[in-house]
Image (cartoon, rainbow, N blue to C red):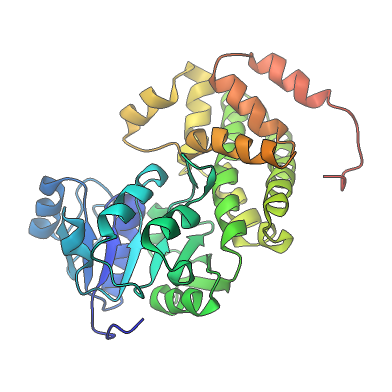
Length: 338
């Protein structure tokens, strides 16, 4: 962390969250290098000082865009990765030869390394080295609301608290309150697992179930998340914070939730994940996290009944009536016997 305070910050990913974070940094006086996947996207951002594809209301006056990762990170004092989860390791590999060993890196993507069934921060550490300079951010943060300065909060976690505090100070605003944590494992798993529960809640809404059902799914979904986090070595209290309960509430209950919206569309139309992603130009992160989560759970003998139900529904192996009956007819037990 030896770069000067006047050096720019690199944001890797020009989707909704990358655009929102670029605006947040830019409006706070930071110079930003924004990496976009396509050259024409980068050129359009530089010409209009707006991202016409995502959150076009955001003023990106202090943002310079490029589709070259090496150009984006050159001379930057920090890097923020905001690609979909499946692209994180790829961009890390592109940065590996050029990024100084002490440059702090923050991962905004909420997911798992799909090839290794582990948190993304571990996969990125394997590529870039220096896990102590890596951090993850998670919480109830819809990019649409954040980009309008609506009050919000999140948690930033790193195994070295100094790294979390660095990003906490970099991103904190009077409308964006950030908390530091030393549990990147728990924060990462919460961020991935809640997306699957959001799909379940979306399916319930789309099928006409009521608030009671949604509350049941969210509460028992939290129990699943907590079981998995603790079994993998994360902290129980992380599940009760912004990355756990906070993000679960907003993702399961909001009209902005892409996972929830997909669940509703699946219940009404039976649309596949691939077709929905092509239609909406957005990634349903929860659908891609299911198999890695179940492999993690199986290796640690952890039950994830709601996650299994969502997997079976999306695969067309069961009907909604069958899966509802299977969940409701599970053996009765004490509530705190999670």
